Length: 107
Image (cartoon, rainbow, N blue to C red; front, side, top):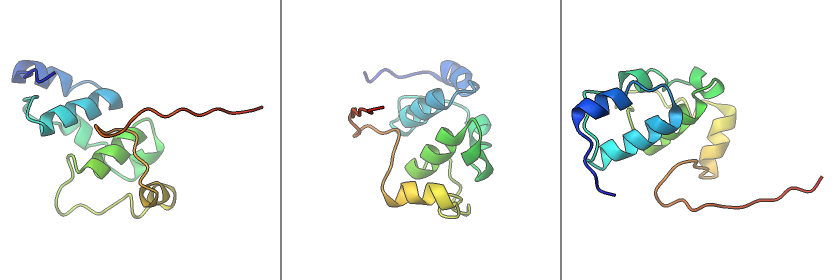
């Protein structure tokens, strides 16, 4: 929609404790349409331990997208037995080029 989100709003968004909000905001920030003072709240969730708590989606996707990753950070995705398999198979849960998929299960 190419709507610029000013810093006063971006700073409020950056305090929301929700992974979907975080991923969208980080994407908008990378695209230059969200201004904020920072993402300290979300950056704290980028750890291997967070791959197995309520913030697993942010911990996985932010790392894979290259958002909030310090240059000298240890690659906790590569160190994890399960999430490294997802990476190996290029599994992504968020991204502009992703399209919806359908699946069905028979019981």
